[in-house]
Each structure stands twice: as structure tokens, then as C-alpha cells.
Length: 342
Image (cartoon, rainbow, N blue to C red; front, side, top):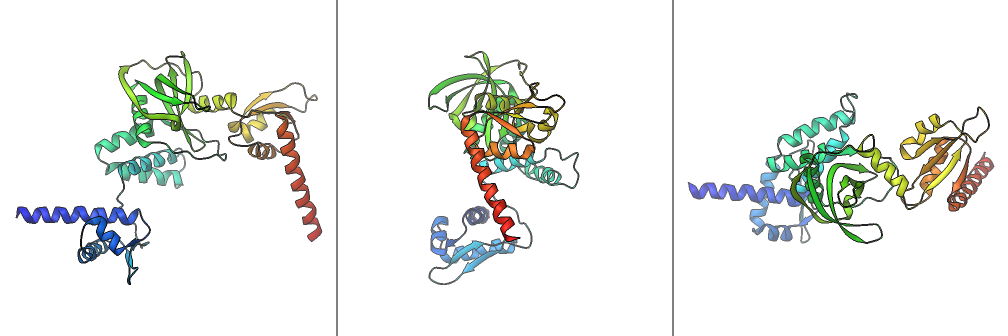
């Protein structure tokens, strides 16, 4: 009896391993797949049949170069995911649920239902990590193009736990210029912004609030065990703090005068920039000063200024004037060629 139980456990474990391999690889040659599972081709075929009985559409390709792959099915069967994949899935669903209560029948509401199902079947150790990252993260997307970066799930989850538990952290941090420093901070919140993650924290060495890009944190942060009383953040929320910090310390800072009331400009591009009243314009026309920090190049600034739908004057940098002229020339040529076809 004991031998039968051990055989069943080994078979079930191997079947789950087979499913995981098929889900993470588009096509497996039969011989290679059998070697990975350390079974014979005949045993592999039996394991594939077990997956089919469970509803997984495994396609077999006969021949010398034949193999197996997981095809699309009529229904969604259970998935097998790794620990870091499970945490990432839960966090992504949590960020997508923002506004779900006010928007029934939307993608946000569907994400909320999916999140409930995912967290329900998570082991306690994973649920604790996923809950901490989701609870301690603010979504502050500017919806602007930017290069995605890779973040270590362990760095993210340990930082989130420290935010939730109000526990001080130590970590090595590499600045944009490559200089590495040791940081001792009181973590406040994580912010997801433009496909990057930021940690908002009070820097105990510099005695001031700072935002750190999580992908520049070297190794895994070390919790010190020391608890702290949370300080008052000098901003409405962590997302606003990060946005303001990027605009202030961006590699390229754009300043323009726009011939439109500040209220209207804020409605159109306010979340991407800092908009201030400016009293130098003609009476009763309205003018505002806009400051922004493009993520990678000046093209995004040109697009944002076009969205405003008003005349503007470039104050800085001079390169933006050249970029606007280049865009204007291309649009003019497009308009002229369109008239020629009509």
C-alpha cells in the first residue's frame, strides 16, 4: 500500500512538472522532454494522456522531429506557475482593479474577480508577499512611452513587507551616473510609474525624503528589525512625490509658455507635467508655464504639446525648437501630399 501511494505521488508530481514545462515552452521534441523528466518515451506518452484527460489540449507531432506542445483549448484549465510568477500575477491584477467599485462590468471589475480567485489558492507564504506588494503600491502611470526595466521579485516583495511593517531597510543603490552608495531608509510606499518601480522613503543619512528606482537596488535589501513611526510625506501621495521628483530632477527639463488657461492645460496634460499660472500674456487670454521631463527623448514632449491644441513658445531647451520644426515640416509635407491626391 505504501509503495502504491509513493508511486501515485511520483506520478502526480511528474505530471505537474510536465504541465509546467509545456506551459513555459512553445514546442518540446519528444526525446528532449522525456530526458528532462527522466522517463521513457512510453511513460511520457502516458503522462501526456493524463493531461488530456484533465482537459489540457496537448498536441502530438509524429515523426523523427516530432514532439509535444500545449495548444489552445475551448476552456481555460488550471495553470501551473512558479512562485515569482504567482506574485507578479497577483500584483498586476491588484493594480488593474483600481476603480473597480465605481465601474461595474469593466476590465477593472473582472481583474478584481480574478484576483480573488488567484489569492484564494495561493500558499500562505506567497499570499503574504503578494498582499504586501499590492497593498504598498500606488499606481501613478503617466501613460507615456518609456523603456521597461527588470525588477527582482524578491527585492520588490521584501521592500513591500518593510513598507507595510514600518521596518527600516539597508541596501546598496546605484545612481544614474553609476556611483554606488549605501542607503539606510524608512520605506513608505512603492510606486508603479511608466513601467518602472520606485520606492519612496525617508533617507536617514541625508535626513530627507527620496525616491529610488527599484531596479537600481543592488542585491536584496536587508531589513534591520528596527521599527519606526511613519513620518508625514511632503506630498499629497507617493505617486505625486515621484512625479514631482522626476520633473525636478529629470535628465532633460522642458519649459514652455502655452497660450491657454492653466485650468484647461491641466485637464489635458496636467498629470504629465507641472502647470503654473503665468501673468505675462495678453489680458483676458490666459497663459501658463508648463514644465515636464520627457522619459527618453524630446518627441514625447512634442506629442504632449500637440495634445494641448494651443499656441506655445519654447523656453528651454533649444533642441526642442529644432524638434518641433522637424515635426512641423513632416506634417506640412503630409498635408500637401494629401491635397495632391484629392
